[in-house]
Length: 108
Image (tube, rainbow, N blue to C red):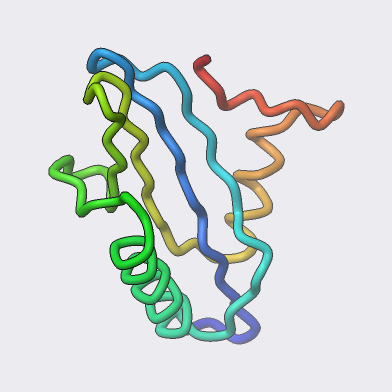
């Protein structure tokens, strides 16, 4: 680990309707972690909580961690957790937003 490196969790939310991507947004969770292992523990706890207390299931897609199926199974919400260095998170966030604060990373 490099001196002074900190980490964040980057959450990706994607909605697929009729097997087509209709919405995608990525956001950095605000908490900074000193160790990558702290991030992994937080992600593990978050996934366990969603599996236990909501309608999310483990995703069959390799690029996402969780999925919530709609009642008619034609519109599904997928979540992915990724650990990034805080410096990388700032760069990604800047790239995803223009200067008015509107997200550029949406396909809706």
